[in-house]
Amino acid sequence: MLVLLFVAFMLALLVGFDVGYSMLLAAFLGVEYRGNEVDPAMMPLSMIAGVDTYALVQVPLFILAGELMNRGGLTLRLIDWAQAMVGRIRGSLGHVSILTNLVMAGVSGSAVADAVATGKPLIPAMKREGYGEGFAGAVIAAGALLGPIIPPSIPMVVYAQLASQSVVKLFMAGIVPGVLLAAGFMVICSIVATLRHYPSRPPVPWPDKARATGRAGWALLMPVIIIGGIRFGLTTDTEAAVVAVLYALGVSLFVYRGLKLRELPRLLADAGRSTGVILFLLAAAGPFSWLVAESQISTTVVGTIQSWSDSPVVVLLIINAFLLLIGCIIEPLPAMIIFLPVLIPLGAQLGIDPIQFGAVVVLNLMIGLMHPPIGLLLFVVSSVGKVRITPVMWQVLPFLGWALVVLLLTIVFPPLTTWLPGHVR
Image (cartoon, rainbow, N blue to C red):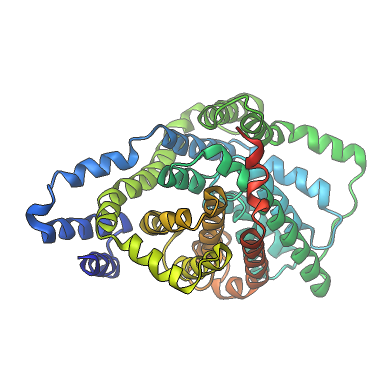
């Protein structure tokens, strides 16, 4: 039955079905194959159960906060601030891209949204100043990768739902890897800029830096309010999402005035559409995951991997090698929904910290977003910046290499992902 399930799923994908519909079709065939053993009512009931949880309220709220930030003028002010801070460094626009995305990551939790928001103004600017189109697209893709790693993170919310773990602790687990990624990306920008003699901008006097910080102050405060509120227990994760929306709405309408009231219906519709895609995937995964669990595949997988090694580090390396291959083919959220019901019990049986496991899995699958040849971020920056995708694929390799180093560090040194969560109740 399990073979039928996955063959039907892959065939539906090849025919052109969406991932969610492919899972539903495969689950339906699995139920029919089981005959009287399974009540057909299991299909709708498990779909409802897949999204009937309070934690998922954060998903539409953080998506909406990101949309408000991008369209309300907050992103452009962050770019101006970043230019004032790092403009004198050679290859400054590459550093501006990483620094802007680092701040934006504390708001939206979406890599694609951040890539679009920063790619539209920065890729043309880099091309005008003589940066290669491949590097311009690659640095935007690398910066956007920070969005789902640094809290808030929509993939972390999904993992918390699948693994019944604390969303707050998972958010905290992403901070250190995210900062390591950003620091390494900026070093790569410096090396590439020096080798290729990319330009720098004149130094910005401290009074002008202070003015740029003042203009961007409302935008800079937003991630501080969200992350600080969660970290110090002033708000729950869901309350922080509500605060993010209200804050972004107020600043966009009344402070920066980059958003008009007449634009709100369209913005809400776009945010609702993005939310619908995620929640539909979770709902469609309900019957699919239930049938996978019923087949006892998790027991088989656990037994097979344990026969190779019972070391948590070795097992994590094996799992990550598998997920890196999957991430080259399937987008992160569908991959999480399909494979985590099998992998989570494996981690639990081997005594791997579930918070570390979640951070490692999310980081691994996010790397797939910029992994050639079909990483989603590569296509996004190519479209947004009107650059050829082949040069982007080549130029993203140094950033991809550093991301893999950070992934390895989080596997070998668990405190990188467990130290901060250990200070959260």
